[in-house]
Each structure stands twice: as C-alpha cells, then as structure tokens.
Image 1 (cartoon, rainbow, N blue to C red):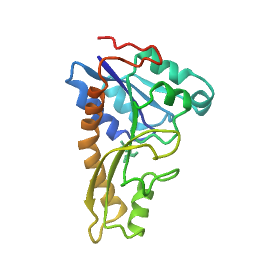
Image 2 (image 1 turned 90 degrees about the horizontal axis):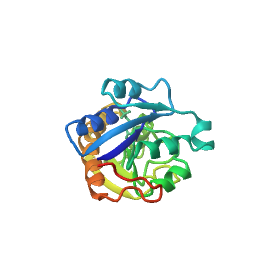
Image 3 (image 1 turned 30 degrees about the horizontal axis):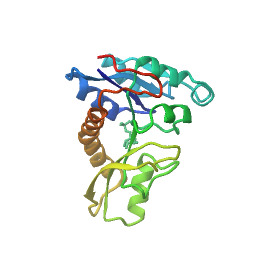
Image 4 (image 1 turned 30 degrees about the vertical axis):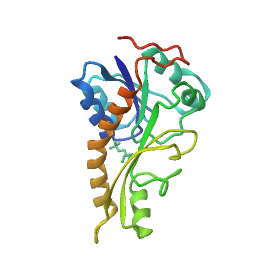
Amino acid sequence: MKRIAIFASGSGSNAQKIIEHFTDKSDIEVSLVLSNNNDAYVLERASTLNVPVYVFDRQIFYKSNQVHDILRDTGVDFIVLAGFLWLVPNNILRGWQGRIINIHPALLPKFGGKGMYGDKVHQAVIEAGEKETGISIHYVNEKYDEGEIIFQYRFNILAGDTPESIAERIHQLEHKHYPEVVERLVRELGGGGNREQGIRNKE
Ligand code: GRF
C-alpha cells in the first residue's frame, strides 16, 4: 500500500477529488489530511470521507519534528499540497525529497511566489494582458512555486473573462488532472519506500 498525505489550508476541493479518486483503489490511499487552519473546510471534507486529520500551528510546524514524525509514523510515501499556504520546512523536504508536489492556478514560472494565490493570481494574469493561462503541477522546494514543473495545462483567456470566471475553469481542470498526475507519480515511486527515513511500504 502506498500512502499519501495532503496538506491544505482552505476549502479543499482538490483534496476531496484526490481522496475520492483513490477510494476504489486497493494499493494507494490518502491516509492523512493536514492543515495549519483549524477552521479550514478541508477538515470537514476529510472527516466526511473518513480520512484522519491533523492540525498544527506555526510553532509546531517550524520549531518541532511533530509533523515530520506523524508523516513518518503514518508511513507516508508521497505528499500533496492542495491550497496550502505555508512553506514546507527543511526536515520534511529532506525526508520526502522528490516526493512533494503542489498545484498552482497559473502557468509558472510567471505569476507565482509569496502572496500569489486565489483570485490575486487571476487578477495579475488579466492585468498583464496574457492571452492564455492554466494550471501548473510542480515539485516543492524551499521557495514558493519554484520547484521543477511536472505538468501544465493551458487555455485561452476570452474577452470578458474575470478572475471568477477564470477561477472556475481552473478548478475544473485541477479536479480533472491533479488526481491523475498524483496517481502517475505515486505509481512511479516503485516499491522501495522512503529509505532515508526508514519508512517501509506496508504491503
Ligand atoms: C487551487 O486553485 C490551487 O491551485 C491553489 O489553491 C487552490 C485550492 O483550492 N494552490 P481548493 O481548496 O482545493 O478548492
């Protein structure tokens, strides 16, 4: 069994799609949803879908090994960020190197970085006069939105498009492609588990 953890700070519609995508698969599951936000709707979505949740604060995340240890003890092989707004600390980056991905609602490397999330991204894309936008799935490193790009899907911006209308199309694309890309990457991991942390896949 391969185990996925999802980090999310807000609504969690992507998290939900990913959880649902794997509910009928016997060899991959979403084992844990983690959030920095006690009020995040993603926590309700996860509970409804019977996925355990874990909430942490800044102190725990950056000044302790608690989150790292929970991921290790859960046997997490792969980490998915889905609307998660904090940088991932080094202990987790090291432990899951090449196994942490994020989705961004624009065509990176443009329109990324700290503070570029939600409708602000789409507003910036429109103001820049871009002809197209899209989604980017990328590896996570110590900087916002700068890891290697894995997958992009683009579409034309139409006259009269607003941040809201773009956001709607972006979400549809994210829901279609993110679970598929996660599955492909998890299947490519092979059977070795995460050796650095001594994690073995519990088949
Ligand atoms: C998505 O648009 C994603 O690209 C961005 O945050 C948003 C999260 O949406 N990183 P949701 O919480 O999954 O609905």
